[in-house]
Amino acid sequence: MTTAAPKRLTTSAMIASFADPDQRTTPAPFGHALARLAQERPEIVGMSADLAKYTDMHVFRDAHPDRFFQMGMAEQVLLGAAAGMAEVGLVPFASTYSVFATRRAYDFLCLDIAEPGLNVNVVGGLPGLTTGYGPSHQATEDLAILRGCPNLVIVDPCDSVDIEQAVPALADHDGPTYLRLLRGQVPTVLDEYDYRFELGRAAELRSGRDVLLISTGLMTMRALQAAQRLEADHVDVAVLHVPTIKPLDREAVIRAARSDRLVLTCENHTVVGGLGEAVASTIALAGIGTRLGQVGLPDEFLAAGALPTLHDRYGLSTDALVARVRAELSDRAPWPADPTPPSA
Image 1 (cartoon, rainbow, N blue to C red):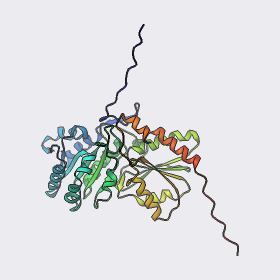
Image 2: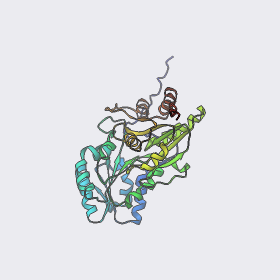
Image 3: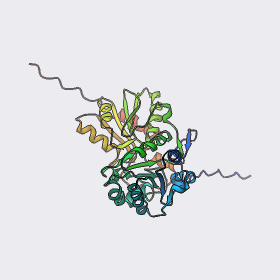
Image 4: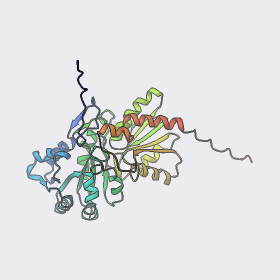
């Protein structure tokens, strides 16, 4: 008698979703939000560098074919043409992969778009570790590259709610923006938290006395999941969602950090040059002494493979985040009490 070999589970490295198997999702929220907005605003145009299907721009293309421009695999041309369209009053949304928009076409984004302050919205797919295709497609350092670009607004949405609400806000903003796109079947999370996206504003989604997780992008979803699981350990976790990386809501960060809680920043980006360092400098410059740690990707080129495996390996999964909080709470000694002033 022979035993059938176990069925091998496979995951497409390129289009794998970071959503949990039983999680509520919304299909292509960016594409549908942009198509709806374009019905009201004839000046909006969509563009892509041969990646419409993989940045959900195909939804806009099918709804408004006369306002969609396929630029081919030429990201510099994509951004240069978007700048020209903005110069004549159009509002372009130009989509490609984050690695190509940042590494390959940075000079065009900086000098053609940001320096004159044009209303061009760059949409970067596969930000951070949202593909298993290795360093050629993993934009683990896009925030570090772009935070230094003057005039540029940077948004890292958590879920479909964030994306749908961010699209009209970006179109209304008088200047260039960069959106870290979550594509395909995107989790729907923030509708349970009475949340409303506001450009440049952070939002406290949960309060908690023991730990503060300052998170952005898909890591806000993981932070909320970790907070719920840590309740079983009687650990009270607050979550501050920061959808706008630049300009950073410094007042919200400073207000939240003024406590004796453990503070961890959580981001789908290298620990160099992203949210963690932005929060750390904000806290330090405000003169706040607090216990601060970073949850993010290591400063190295990452491996290729199935996305769930990579998130576990590099500390972005909910399991990894829960374990990190537990370790930090057990390893860190309490802060020493303030010294008693000498008696007169």
